[in-house]
Amino acid sequence: MTAPTISFCTLGCKLNYAETSTISRKFTELGYVRVPFGHPASVVVVNSCTVTAQSDKKCRQAISKAVRSAPNAVVAVIGCFAQLRAEEISQIPGVDLVLGTRDKMDVVNRVHRMCFGSEEPPRTDGTAESFEPTYSLLDRTRSFLKIQDGCDYHCAYCTVALARGSSRNASVASVIASARDIVRSGIREIVLTGVNIGDFGRTTSETFLELLQALEGVEGVERIRISSIEPNLLTPEIIDFTAGSLVFLPHWHMPLQSGSNSVLARMGRRYQREVFEQRVQAILQRWPHAAVGVDVIAGFPGESDQDHEDTVSFLERLGLAYLHVFPFSERPGTRAVLMPGKIPHQVKEARARELIGLSARMRAGFYARFLGDTRPVLFEGRGGNRTVVGYTDNYIKVEVAGERSLINQIRNVRLHTLLPGGHVEGILTH
Image 1 (spheres, one colour):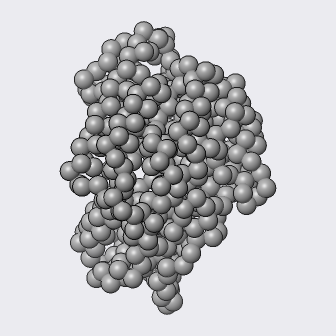
Image 2 (cartoon, rainbow, N blue to C red):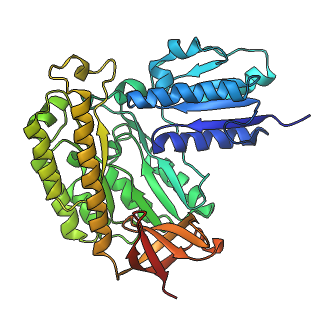
Image 3 (cartoon, helix red, strand yellow):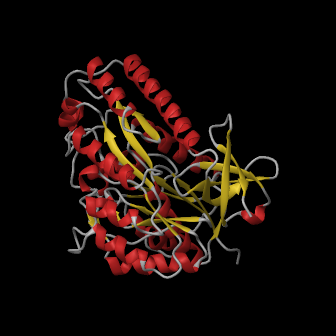
């Protein structure tokens, strides 16, 4: 009997990639053979995202491609878009199974029964309240380790709480067990992921700091990167501990969203910009070489020209490494939909372009600060002709002349030249 084949399409956040990797391993254990998405397959799984209108569009396109490329496959759509648009997706010809965030990790059992059993699993749009630890092993240099899911913040623009449910987390012991598995697999860097990871411990009466302290003690762990954390949850104790650690990397990412306190209040954010600035200053005082990245939304309802200018000037003075810029996207079911003062599309896009340009200047300036320095680089893949690329501990993208054998090695590299592509040419120091 020929082994069944399966392909995956993952959209959205690192959390989705960790979940897809775990689901893929479970299918493999049952004898399924993974093939690239877009190839004919027995089963196609689309792990969906709904954070913006563009995300919804990409999900619909991925579903269409899944049905078109594998017309005889069992097509399962899981995740956040499936949670909020279950009825719409279930009406798409060729889609066999729709699982929201509560049931998506059960996709293996349900699909396997559809392929080899008599029971047809029901479609579902249930709520997400359980937690299953997941981590990725598809990239042999770094692993996304899910430690937390859901959010209780209910910001005015965000559907995450609707799609992923309330905040919940794995236990410290469970995360440590996963980290040990990752280390044993030969992966050199662990990236801690979640929806609101600073909220870790809410369901287990533990703390994020306790988790970090336990992770540092995992034998063989070399590099741990923290993906993103809310500024109000980044405590001085966390900053002090990680700054004194040999395994936690000098790279922080925090969602600011706006440099205007009035906009932050309308967004329902739980801090003012002064708190955000204090956190950045505390990081850079302990780690002058740290990269600090920031999320920012352009064109939130009611954002005046002055609010935008305040955001730009605020960001310019913080000493950041880069920005992730998102034009405001109106999401059904959020409070922002009903807010007055909608920003015209052209104005919103112009503000976003200005912020993207600012980010490019920030990144170039940050990279230039370290030219001539030597930093550890984890090589992750091939670059151009006979080169390999990787990232320093403080998240500078580096390309060096070298062979494929360097991939998944950590080597000291002297940062030499800023390249036109926006990364740095380096020289191995032997």
